[in-house]
Amino acid sequence: MANFNSINPFTGKTISELPELSQEDIQVRLNKAAEVYQIYRKSEYSYRSERLYKVAEILRADSKELAEIITNEMGKAITESVAEVLKCAWVCEYYAEHAEEFLSSKDVSTDASLSYVKYEPLGTILAVMPWNFPLWQVFRFAAPALMAGNIVLLKHASNVQLSAKKIEEVFLNAGFEDGVFQNLAVKSGAVAAIIENSVVKAITLTGSEFAGASVAEVAGKNIKKCVLELGGNNAFVVLNDADIEKAVEVSLIARLLNAGQSCIAAKRFILEEEIHDEFIRKLKEKILVYKVGDPTLDETKMGPLSSSQAVDALDMQVQKSIELGANLIYGGQSDGAKYEPAILLDVKPGMPAFDEELFGPVYAVTKVKSKEEALELSNQSEFGLGLNLFTRSKETADFFIENAQEGSVFVNSMVKSDPRLPFGGVKKSGYGRELSVEGIREFVNVKTVYMEDI
Ligand code: NAP
Image 1 (cartoon, rainbow, N blue to C red):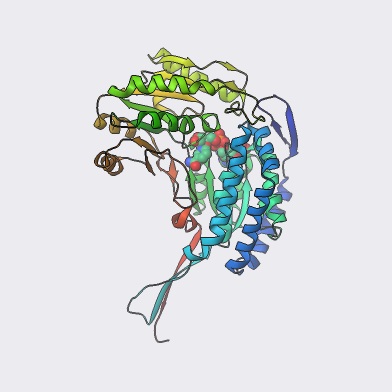
Image 2 (cartoon, helix red, strand yellow):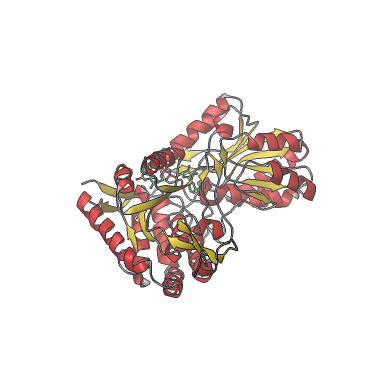
């Protein structure tokens, strides 16, 4: 049986070797999920929320310890790991408080004596999750899904199996029955058969386009509901009338958070020509504090990428873009899994830095002559997760909101996920939504009830 080797990307040392589940172990867990669902689906909202509040309490109390696991496994700066754990506590509290309101039955007036819509759980949902936010990606799905009465099976990324194990422990320690939230320590090759298993009723995947297409294919063949949260190549549009100081400040987080390894990171910087040079000058001053350092230290603003292979892939995209005419004016040095933030100017469609998702701390900058050109370039992407827009004009903001081919538009702010707002994309960024009313209703049976003569 193959093992999962978790390697600390900063030190290069193996930090854990966990066993993969056998076929028999997988079946035992699936059976347990099916069994416990018959009890859990009948539980009151108050019963579920009590436990989810307890999860939040544990996350807050153990935030430091959990953050250390995240940082050691995938390399993000410890302050960001702590913030991630606390955001998970928030999402649990939010759904513990609001799920009942989001899922309460709705009367609809028809010709019947009584007609209404009621929301029921679907059963066991398989969650295939990525390593870049090892806790947040899981909790933002699991909190609403569990409140809706579903059972969760987690298949986490191979390099964050300690985090996965820990998450399961948190749910158990909070009082959820064994089986309501289970970690399946399996590699991606085992996923198709799990989707095909009759216990699994629906699937959510956060990850790459390739993984999304593979999972959706099997789900489709088996007529099972699927939500996909895939990659992004978000534009960060700064127009002539913008507050440049603020735009530069926000860009640092939008591009460099998690060492740039975020689906919703700002990746293509589309700057109107009048403010282009000022933006770059200010950016070059402010970016200086972002140097790759030991991610376990509080003062470190940026850790390494998740692996040296990730650095190689990123560097290849940057070098190819330079060959095609892009101009590297800052950074880009690498050493193992470490990659220093970089600024690439004169980026154009046809270059990897424009056409592809750069999963690392690289500013790909394109100069444009007008807001119309900015919109056209922003939409010129096979992805459609979110748009960051900087302007002081409400009319211009409305023009972008109306015409942007995106799952979200954030004006004078960066694209981010928030438990109170729906999150998801269009085009190759996937389909379906997480969070908010829309998200919690993805994994429910919307049951129509129509009664006469009663
Ligand atoms: P990934 O390689 O697609 O992995 C994501 C998950 O899918 C992992 O658990 C992985 O397992 C599994 N997987 C991979 N190939 C599979 C297959 N053929 N069948 C079934 N499962 C499979 O993605 P990643 O490199 O971890 O994450 C980076 C990508 O995720 C980026 O494109 C990023 O933009 C996207 N992302 C999107 C969002 C969003 O909300 N839209 C959020 C975060 C990340 P193994 O690790 O065992 O291979």
